[in-house]
Image 1 (tube, rainbow, N blue to C red):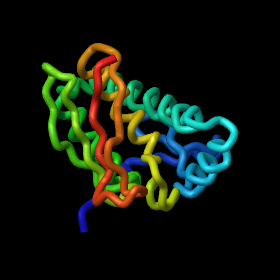
Image 2 (image 1 turned 90 degrees about the horizontal axis):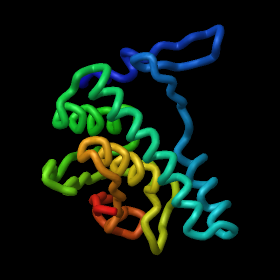
Image 3 (image 1 turned 90 degrees about the vertical axis):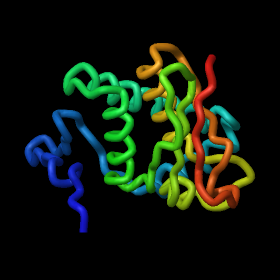
Image 4 (image 1 turned 120 degrees about the vertical axis):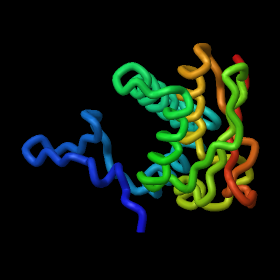
Length: 169
């Protein structure tokens, strides 16, 4: 069994009730919590419900990418590889890079076994807004400009995997 670097290096601060990885606070939460939150907000907010999760994912992806570049000195490819591995190790699914070019925006990520698609269940539209946001936040830092990510395929829609691609804004 392969060692999980995230779990091995997660620091629990009992007095504060916090979990930290490389000094950054993390939170363990069931994917069903986010799935049910999305389902509850969609009837009221429509597409803005998914957009809110996307924006949250974007900020997390942006901050992580910036930290890995500025604090840890990772190259673009090391950042991408680390983010793909971290996504797997924190239980989001089997993330893999399919394409990347800094001439972009060319960045395509696939996820098999998305925790978010599984928790949401069947849908007529993509539901992995948090992952989509993380990909866009990462891409925006790597490419040095604002980009959005699309999810043209989602396991919730019956596709074999979720797929995330960038589009220029």
